[in-house]
Amino acid sequence: MNKFKEHIINLLKKEVNQEIELEIPPNPEMGDYAFPCFPLAKTYKKNPNDIASDLSKKLKKDRFIDEIRVIGPYLNFFINKNALTEETLKKILKEKEKYGSSNIGKNKKIILEHTSINPNASPHVGRARNALIGDCLARILRFQGYKVEVHYYVNDIGKQIAMLVLGTRKKKDAAFESLLKIYQGISREVESNPEKEKEVLDTLNKLEKGDKKIKSEFKKVVDIAVKGQVKILSELGIKYDVFDYESSYLWSKKTNEVLELLKKTGKFYFDKDDRVVLDQKGFELGMKMPVLVLTRSDGTSLYSLRDIAYALDMGKKRENIVVLGEDQKLYNEQINAALLMLEKKPRKAVHYSFVLLEEGKMSTRKGNLVLLEDFMQEAVKKSSDELKQRYKKIDQKAANAIGHGALKYSILKVSPEKNVIFNWQQALSFEGETAPYIQYAYARISSIIKKHRRQMPKKADFSLLVKKEETGLIKKTAMFPDLLERAAKELRPNIIANYAYELAKQFNEFYHIHNILKEEKGVREARLLLAESVRQTLKNSLNLLGIGVLEKM
Image (cartoon, rainbow, N blue to C red; front, side, top):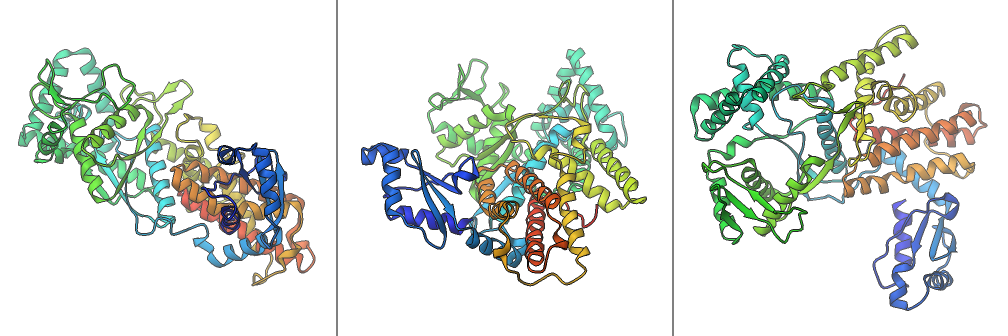
């Protein structure tokens, strides 16, 4: 609907000398677009209702606009349905896999950093939310023309890794599958034994001072963990362009350079414990004592200093977007405050909330979690059972597409700032707001086209599509490019996930009312091309979510 929207904006610009923002009315009976007149009240010194009325007299209907109606302080536009039908269906059938894409990101480069799971064990479903959101954002941004480089920042020198190093010393050949139990065991030891805690900190100290044996131990265990984690995520179609390692900021000049730059801000000082601290007053961080500690009392760097150095490096190359848990919101604001002190552009963060079990938050250390790998296997098993029940045989590729799709959709459909309440039964359901439901709508259309038994028509008389269900579907498919642009702008994958479900639901309602293949000639061809347009839009939506489609389910 971009062409119609732009046309309305251009008409209004001729009458109103300011930025035009259109809204979509909550009820289709109120029109397709609405222009709120509140912002004009101060300029025109008039009631917004009167301004809307005055504007309506100046604007005329044309080939794009059927009606202009005043509804209180809003000027509502009803677009020409025939023009919309022709424009939308022809565009989808011509552009196919490219429908919805744009060049708004042309020549713009982005580093998108996501996942960054502590490399100490197999990831649980809660940690996977980061990777799933990040992967979906990369797909959406690339579809909008951005050049996206996906980075995985490996936290390879933290306390958790030091604990794992100690835990694996007695294991000659620790496998990835054994890391979780080893980590949980050493965690219990550290909690109950202060000496063990001291040993962990001593190990970190030796690492930062460049002890070659310790460095080798850290590298070995991190390599095992990262390879294992990436293998699991790659099965979900999640890929990375670059792996950055936090350890590279220990043995380089970068952190010292950052300290020197921060000294020049005048906000840099040593506290009573001899730690280097950055005073962040004035940045409205909501802290009683807004300070960021950068080093330990022995002079070794903290992750905050390394993160500033890393953010500076990423910011040199292009715009930097990072996917982080909501528990890191304040910390990210502190890092951004430090970047602003250095007169550098802050990184843009997408914060997501927790994936919760019904009994509470998942924890790798405590062991109350659902492993991503286990859930993937369970999801594929359930989809295999469903396929066997329906067709007496199992297509493994189809089972993977359905199972992995169910996992992804159950997380991506939820707005990032909201918790996902994890429920096995609900996530794997073939009914309701789930990926299998959307995949089935796609397969249903494929089945209709196959049963047609003739070559699909090249063109049709779209003016025959006048039923309410038909115009509703056309409007819904026409909304896709606008919603995709919004999803890219707001960095919200749930916009596309929710849209895909709504479109699938709307088609299923249409299907139950109208038998496409039994319609008379003319109407049949028009409806076949409408169904094909819906199928293509569903496919493009699911592709952006990283979910596969099936011709048969």
